Length: 333
Image (tube, rainbow, N blue to C red; front, side, top):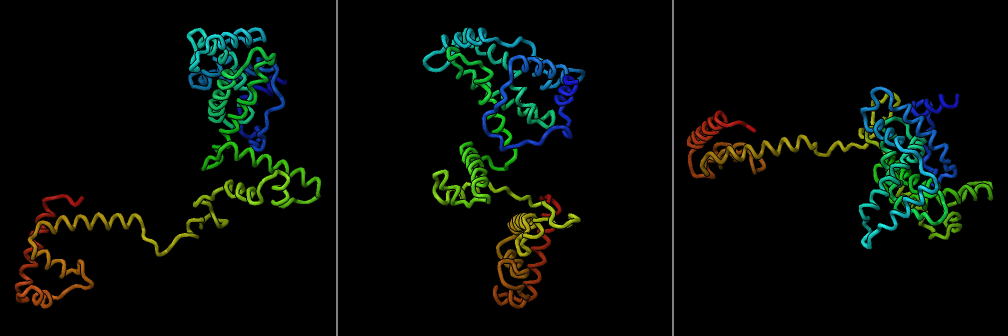
């Protein structure tokens, strides 16, 4: 019964999984035992490698995670010492040390699966979180000291967990905030909870800041940085007929699409006017109010150019005939 339930959890049905709690930023307290890790990895492989899942990246990863046996304490010390012995002054590894590093990582992939599946709501979620956890695993392998007498699963738990939480935080915010900001907010929430128990009421920002030794306006600034954004498509009415964009829209603002179309048309008209001579171009511009505050009459243009009204009409017709011929020969765009 327990194995059946774990297999169901590993298949990640959204309805049965808990929601992601981003407030759990501390190091995980329930570090898995090697036996638990072995069972989790085996069940994961059994759940995901069936049928068509073997063809995708997640099925391949889980198969790889279960391919090798788990390391015991002796194996961890052996690989850790081999890595340290092959560490060059510039931080690179010798070929032998690189092989030890790769084996160390592969033997502990199941540790990443153990933590990633606790926060995944779908197969895609699990794949993303496993990718983030792998980065933490590789960091922990590089930092691991085999002579300190501590098991690697306990040592690496923090790095893997913190990388997964960083991935979740980044996913839930349109703008990524640095990790130190999240750590300060976590400390503030913890102090707030303590002061609520102490005072029997919600503490003020000043009381929290004094307790943490911060400047009075530091907590206010932190909370301003972490304000969540609002979608312009968020409905403002129960029937969804009105959105936030509708409420804040400037009715007098220029429509970008219309402005772009007008700019294209103006450029096209300028190209067409280059096909007539200067006097004909002047007549067309004045006749249609281009560059002026009104449309000029034939008499006004005649007085401006020193010709008769009839001559202005003839020149206008000649210019329009040239432009119509140009439009017929060349595409408008």
